[in-house]
Amino acid sequence: MQNITMYVAAAQTLGVVKDYAGNQTVPPPTLVLGAKVALKLRLFAESDGYEPYPFTDLSGITSWEFVLDNDYNAATSAKITADSENIIARQIQHSISGEDRTETELYIPIPSMATVELKTALADNETLTLNAELCGYDANGDLAFILQIIGFTVRNRITSPGATTPTSPTYLTAAETRGLINGIPGYAAGDGIEFTDGDSGLVLINCIGGGTAATTITKAFTAADLTGKTTSNGKTTGGVKSYSFTELGVTSPVIAQLFFESVDVTGSPCVKLNWTPNGLTVTLTDFDNIDAGFSLILTASGNLLSKSFTATDLTGKTTSNGKTTGGVKSYSFTELGVASPVAVQLLYDSAVIPNGCAKTEWNSSGLKITLADFDSIDKTFTVLILK
Image 1 (cartoon, rainbow, N blue to C red):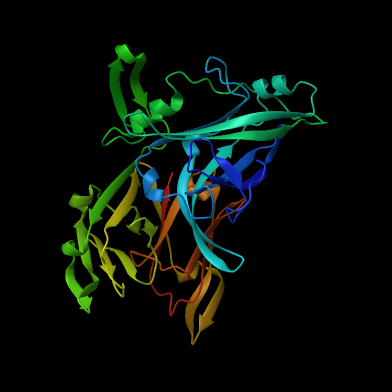
Image 2 (image 1 turned 45 degrees about the horizontal axis):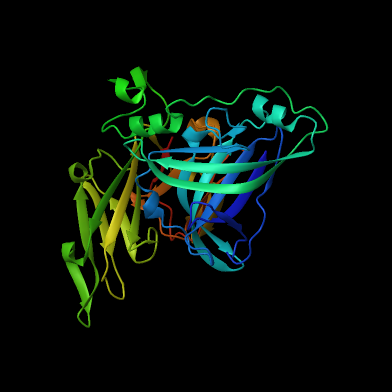
C-alpha cells in the first residue's frame, strides 16, 4: 500500500499542491497501477502559508466523493474511485521541525488501483496523467465543498497488477444519495427507510443499512452563557457551560470538539470536556479574555461504538512510586470492527484527555494508544469509535 501525505492550498476550487510549510508549489504525487492507496490530504486555508483550512467549515458535510479521471465527461466512468463511504474529515495534531501544528486532514482510502478503466487508459504506456475531484455533500444532497487537483501521475506496471475490476458506477451520484440518507434525522445503519422522488430521478425503496450515518451537531455559546464566571481586569477568563443529553440530542457520550472562534481548543490546558450522567460539562479556565464565541461540535452515529480498558490492560507500562503512569493499548482492525482508520476519541474517567498525555495512531494492524505522564492511571479509559 502507498501511504501518501500531501498538502493542498484549498482557498480556491482549483487546489495547489504545496510543501508542508505552504511556501513552495510541488507536483502531485505519483500513484502506481494495482497499488492500494491511503491518501492523507491536508488542507491549507490560504494560497500561501500553512494556516489550516477551517475545520468548522466542513461540519455540515455528511458524505464525500473522490475520483480521478482524465476527461470531464460525466457519462463515462472515472478511472479511479475512492472508498467514499470511509473518507474521514478530521483534525490532527503533530510536530514538524519541532513546531506543534493542528491540521485539517481528509483521509481518503483508495482500495482499487487496478480498475478496468485505468488499465485500458494506460494500455502499454509508461504513465498516465489524471485529475482529481473531491466533493462534499450536505444533508440535502447539495454540493457544499469542491476541490480539484490537476496533474496526478499514474505509473504502469512491468509485472501484472493482478485482476482488474470496473469502477463503481454512480447515478444520482452515490455521494449525493449518501448525503441525503445520512442527513435524515434519526437515521442509523440498519433502519428501514422508504421514500420516492420521481421528479428528481431518485427512486430509493426500502434502503436497509448502507454507509456510515454520521450526524454532526453544533452548539454555539459565548461568555454571556457561562455560569460560575471568573474575571480578571474586567475580562472573562473562565466559566462553565453545561448541556443535558436532551439538549444535545444524544443519549450517551459521543465524539466532541470545542472551537474558540475557528481554533480547535479540545484537549488544551484551558478546556475540560467532561461527560456526566446528565450530559456534557465544558469547563474553561485561564483564558486571557473570552471575547469571542465557542462552537461545540459533536459527531454521533448509529455506528458509534466504544471500547473500555484500564491500567491492567496496558503493555510496556511505566510506573512511579508504585503507580502506573503510562503504557500502550492496541486494538486490531478486527477487534474494532473496521477495515481502515476511522475517527476516534479517547476519554479518561468520562473526560476528554488533555493534549500530551495520550497519542492515538493508526498502523497497518489497527489502532495504537500510547499513554504518558499520568500522575496515576487508576480509572477507566473509553475509546469512542465512529464506524
